[in-house]
Length: 69
Image (cartoon, rainbow, N blue to C red; front, top):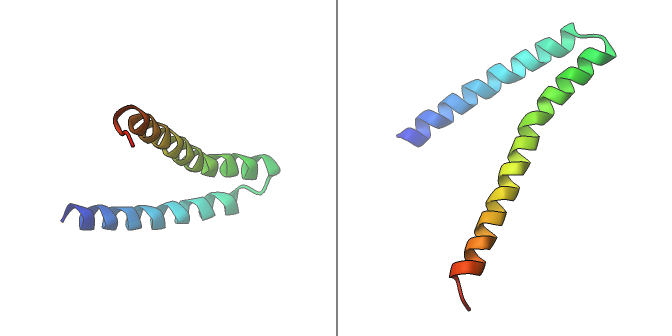
């Protein structure tokens, strides 16, 4: 049940986010405005890559410490 609700919230948030991004891009015709929107879109990618890297470090450390072959 929680997975369905979170999936619906994610889909609605994605559609709303894409709408506002396209609205911002269409209103900002200057190079600086487009650069600002592009940098704002890169933050989620940067956060995801950092979380993914830290998770792999955590797993590798656990395996080296507690799992023996």
